[in-house]
Image 1 (cartoon, rainbow, N blue to C red):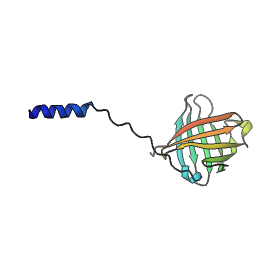
Image 2 (cartoon, rainbow, N blue to C red):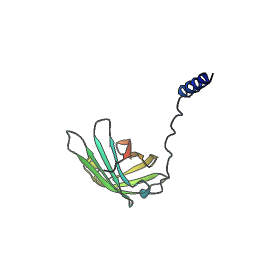
Image 3 (tube, helix red, strand yellow):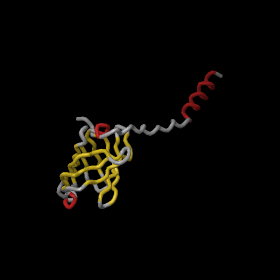
Image 4 (cartoon, rainbow, N blue to C red):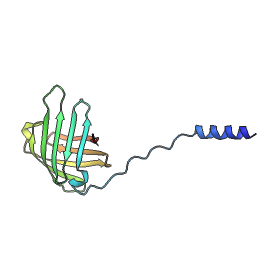
Length: 137
């Protein structure tokens, strides 16, 4: 009888599905210091993006484009017209040379501390990219 009870308890424990993992909580974004750090992503074209955001708003994006020449964007983030929005004044853009001194809108689509989704809107439309915090080596 005791064996049956133990066996029944084991079967009941093994048959239940694990609870789904909750998504990470969104964090507040009060300015560039909130999202400062180094971020990375491989995009759907196999290009490797490395983004550095400093607490003062300095912004540097380097893209390794595989067989194409690498490119870089640099500028400064300043507060935008709504929460979680910034204006990025580019001082360098070798990815889009005709826009080297442009200002683009940057919105924080999501920020969890370990992932950062940016929606960058310029003359070519909106680009959405989700970066992961760069692992420390």
